[in-house]
Amino acid sequence: MKTALIISPHADDAAAFCGATLAKLSAQGWHLILVRVTDDQKDSIGFSVEETIQINAQEMHAAAKILGIQEIIELGFVTDSLTDVLLGTLRERFVYLFRKHKPYAVFTFDPFGLYEGNQDHTRVALAVEEAFWVSCFDKHYPEHFTEGLEPFSVCERWYFARQLPEINHYEDVTETMDKKIMALCAHREMMKNTINQTRLQLKTHGKRMAMLDEAMNGDMSPLLGMVMQKMAGQWQRRRIGRKAGLQRHSASHGLARWKN
Ligand SMILES: [Zn+2]
Image (cartoon, rainbow, N blue to C red):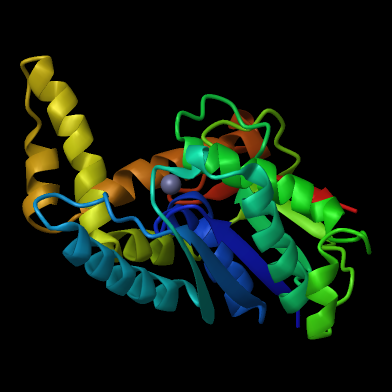
């Protein structure tokens, strides 16, 4: 059985960026461990910080269950503030987790991803990329060895991004797209905040979309399903070529997958 660490800066990144792939791997027998780096204390509308932490954590557990994630590790950094945390501090935490859980693969944002405006995503990606080789050294963080841990190397890095500089792996996720959409709907408060950002942008533009209002107040699956299926359909077209014909609802997930 292979183990994967999914290093997710925020609670919803795992579902949003690789949820269907995770559900597929879980069904194949992989042991999936979600590492949530921040506490998402700012990500809600109208709730206090304490309520937000509680709601987002509850919804993350529900989403993880849908995707077949068996374990969750909370690192508890303040959300949207990782730019103020030393990169070495994050790197040490990831090296420790590699040595402790000995994952075959690690999933996170691509450190070379394009058009990334979220510094939590960028910082985590850079720290994971460095932790990947630093964890092999016996003179980096020798205090880990007093716990019985040893130098360790992850075999594969599976990277996702808003836009990847290079896609070298496509995963057919036609069978598990529904689980990804269900998991995203389980992150209701964070998705509401995401949808609301688009609403506010439209408001500035003097416009309004009924579909966004309906998703905010009721069932989110029509909106999230449409957006996610469209993205997965675009990857599928790139994968099989436009002339090959596209089965309705067939879906792929494009990734940068580096095997060492
Ligand atoms: Zn995020």
